[in-house]
Length: 300
Image 1 (spheres, rainbow, N blue to C red):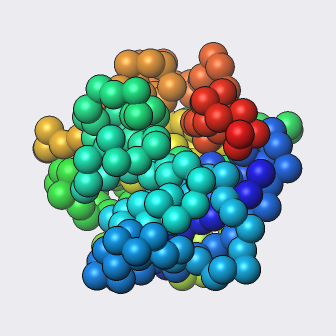
Image 2: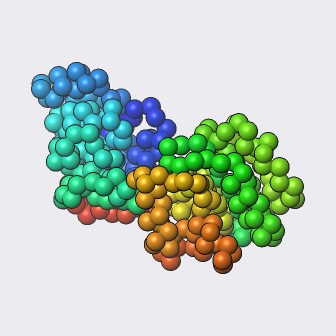
């Protein structure tokens, strides 16, 4: 199966696309080729004259996959110049019917169409590990966002309760690029079962490795990508709550996870201090790969 991946240079988009490609490769041999997105005008010209946006030496694709608005026109140009199916991983800025398949998170409220496949959150490259260490846990801190009021004191209070309750777990806390500079100075929790690793001191693959081995994860409510990565890694997930939550699509998506019993909110954990694993594995990339190969078996 030949797959062209349109890369716009954004790590988050590449993580989504390659999560899907990895899942497809687990089901069928895949040969992957990366192409760069054309400019809007360049893509229009390519579509008009049926020119391929890729090197002519590349084998013809079965699928062309992209995420991010900058990839949309290139996906269409590549499809017009080849027999490949164009798959976009988001709610596109163009009509969904222009693509062969749109893989869209439910919280984005996509239109109902045979060309739309809804997912619980965005895809990622995490895979569940066969063995988890019950003595290891992660605390993943986001930061200021439009989804609610970030208050250091509220998050610190919740972290302290978790660390003190689960003393048998060695917790590792890490921050993100959005974490306020004054958060770690205000953390000031003296506990021998808590290690702090600032985001600046984590290297490539650090989070993925830690999620793979940790049995537990607490994630701030604003950190949606890390929530879905933690679930995909097969980790029992708790949610550290932010204040004055806005009625946004992201917050609605997190609360949908709560309604499904996939995550435990801090206020619920206080009444019953235990995190539980989802009853069934959470792997949206695998579910999407299976849907694609059901529609177009082995790219035929």
